[in-house]
Image (cartoon, rainbow, N blue to C red; front, side):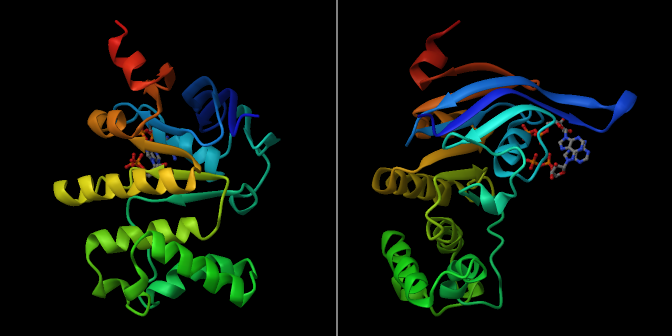
Length: 229
Ligand code: ADP
Ligand code: ADP
């Protein structure tokens, strides 16, 4: 079964005569465990597409399924996804542990289970020695890893990455890219990763969705995409 299915997905902003269609019927099937990169120029609809999968943006027409279940009418919290944003959006007054644990506390996961999951994520991300620190006491790379930790502990079926590297300097970007690849090797979680950077897309993608003007122009491995006229 496909992990994510998009069927004739359409997005319009606004209503009636002033409506502006920005996604024009996207179809795609993403297999379990795949790392998919959505790439294309600014304004082509990448982040709108991702936000519809996340439940942060209404789907105007068509259907999105996750794990065989149509999610159009489900809240983000009901979709079995976790999202990693460009700005890490950590809570400044909370420790690293509490930042990672917060979503689980809200979801009323038992305290022992929270501790087990946070410790496991911290180990994978090499954050074990920083759990008592506040975000301001961390480097940019460590903060980005905490943001990923917060996604991991939810044990979602799908990871959604919204340009998570674009605010980092070149060195940190390369480092975090490796981190994300390692994470995917270890956890094998189906991932959708949005970027406007073609090099980033080529190095990370198992398959890539190439968007242009709200249309999916290509969907294939980096080799397929770059050897096609
Ligand atoms: P990308 O992520 O590829 O840069 P977006 O998905 O952000 O592109 O935007 C796609 C198109 O939709 C753009 O033309 C943008 O101006 C428009 N758009 C995005 N969000 C909104 C919104 N909330 N209201 C109206 N138009 C929007
Ligand atoms: P990005 O698409 O990379 O996230 P943007 O600067 O394009 O960054 O958009 C930032 C926010 O503004 C997003 O939440 C998007 O939905 C919204 N937005 C983008 N374009 C428009 C638009 N034309 N009208 C209203 N909101 C928009």
